[in-house]
Structures are given as C-alpha cells and as structure tokens.
Image (cartoon, rainbow over all chains, first blue to last red):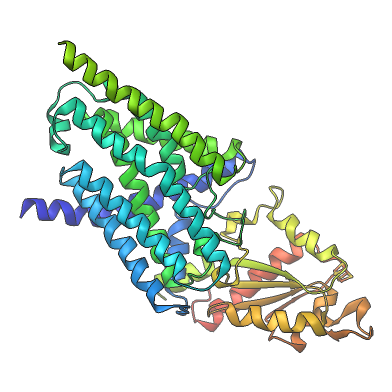
Length: 286
Length: 145
Ligand code: SF4
C-alpha cells in the first residue's frame, strides 16, 4: 500500500515539477537572448489552453499511440520512484519512443513522416547508450535494481563518470535541444513546420507536452541516481545538468541527423564501452 | 470563469500569414517577435502550424490565389480562434485595392475580429491589436474585467 501511494504522489507531482522546469527553461532562454521572457507558470497556461481547444483528429490510430506514449512514460517514472529494475525502465522508455514514432507515421502528412523518420534516427543514437548505462550500473553494483544503488555508500559518479558524460549527450537528444532538435523543435524556430508534432492539435498536443514534462523529470531522476547517497547532491547535479543543457541549446546551431548519430555513437558508445571494460578488468584483477 | 478560460487569455499562439503584400507589414509583425518588443512576455508565441495556433495574424490584400489558401488555413485552426487583419491592405485592400487580381481586404474571405490600421502597422499597434482581440475573446466568454 505504501508503494502504491508513493507511485500516486509521483504521478501527480512529476508534471508540476516538469512544467515549472519548462517555465524556467523559457525564462532562462529569454534572458540569455536579452529578452524578459514569459512568467514561469506560462507552460501551465499553455497546457490548460490546449486542453480547452476543439478536438481535431486526423487519424484515430494516432490517438491510441499518443496515449501509449503517455502511459509508458508514466510507467517508467513509477519504476524509477519505486526503485525497480533499471534495465526494464530503459526498455519501457524505448517502447514510449516507439509509440511516439508510430503516432507520427499513422497519418498521411509528409511533415509528420519526416519528423517520425528523424525521431527514429534519434532513437538509434540514444538507445544503445541508455542500454549501456544500465549495463554499467550492473557492472558496478552486480544488480539492475535501483534500490541497490541507494544501498551503496559511495556514489556511482566516482566510477561511472564516462557513462555520466555520455548520458549528458543523451539528455540533449532526449530533450530535443539544439544541436539535436531535428525531429521537432520548440517555439519560434520551426523546421519542417513542427516535424512529428505537426498533426497533433488541441488536447492531443497538450498530452504530448504533458508526456514531455514526465520525461524531463524521469531523465533528471536518472541523472540524480549517479549521486544517490545523499540524494540532494544528486538532485543538485541533475539541476546543474538541466541548466547546462539550456546553455548548449542557446549557443549551438542545429546539426544534421547523420552527424547526430555519428556524434552520439563516437562519444557515447566509446565512453560507455571503455567504462564497462575498465570495470570488468578491475574486477578481474582484484 | 475557469482555469481554461483564463489560460486562453494568457497564452495566444499566433500564426502569421501573408497574402500578397509589399512585405512592409510582415517585417513589422516579425519585429514584434524580436527581443526589442519581445511579445513572449505575454505568452505570445509564433507558431508555424495552423493546428497549434489560436490567433491568425494576416497581412496584405487577398487575391484570387491566396483566398483559397487563407480559407484552408482558417479551417485548420481549432476553435476558439481569432483573426487579426494587420495593415491597411489587410483591412481594405489599401494601395492595391483596384488591382485586377485583388479581391480586397481579409474580411472578404474570412471573418475578422480586429483591424489594425497603418501602412505599415507599427509593432506597438500590432501588440495592441492582439490585446484587443484577447479582450474580445474574454468578453465573449464572460471573463472580462
Ligand atoms: S499596409 Fe502598407 S506596408 Fe502594409 S502590406 Fe500594405 S502597402 Fe505594405
């Protein structure tokens, strides 16, 4: 019963935190560009306005996929707060991404198809690194359970810092920030109109935004795991990573999809594999 | 009443469409989005997609070709929506009013809520126009102050 309430509280609180983070994102971005920027709670206004708009759906299948995207993302978050298996969490995150891509493919708009294709490329570039992150945690802890991470006195960051750097790159891709905002991008700089989100409108677009807020919290939570003892240090590290992403977003230009895959594999995969290989060699010696 | 009604007033996403103008008014609309005027303070965001927009900002006189496009775009904006005609051309046809290919102002094709005069309309006037449109929306929904 206790676990149940933790999950319920997480499901309610996560979008509030995510929305505030999105508001801080817009404020800091505006200040970096020499503007005043909207109020911090602007994303909530946007969300409620979108929920109040008329429903226009271009394809019914699309709606099924978008609910799937939301449900899988929430399941991931529940896995994180209940300290369950991190490998399963990564797989569920992959399912969520697949749902989003299929939603993009399920209507006839070419913009949506372009966006979905590019989203697939994004998945191709981040999924292996996420998987290797889980493996790295296993190599260090001998278990995939997140609760084991909390039981260790020394932080994961000490031995897994190369994987942490790879995860920061992945965070940029997952949050769809420059230079990786190829499948869709945030306000006022549209390429391909709005990419994969072109065909969503009103309440359905609001659902995507809600899912993105869950995603921000989930990813920052995974980053916080790298300093789980005490947890507040991990949360500070996660917030610092978030602000770092904002700076990168504002100083970087959008790059091509091919470059993204090459970059994330060259940096992310190599760092992860070296890290895991080192851990196993050390274990073999001792 | 209601958080949704308040949010509608606080977050108007605009879509900018140019019929067949001299481009003067377009540049002024884009000037609103620059850091100098920074309409994002009021929650106004420029969307490239009619399906995400709430307010259609239309410049230039309608000609026979753009009338079709304009109707299509208007139909794709989900309700509740507002239309703002920016510049003398969009209001009445302006200096182009008796050209052979010009139908006239935007209201010949889609219903217009707010007319912003001026050749070219100043950014301040355009922001005022959006505010006026929102007040109209608020009054229509009974949340006006
Ligand atoms: S109103 Fe004047 S500036 Fe604006 S589009 Fe017409 S001619 Fe150009």
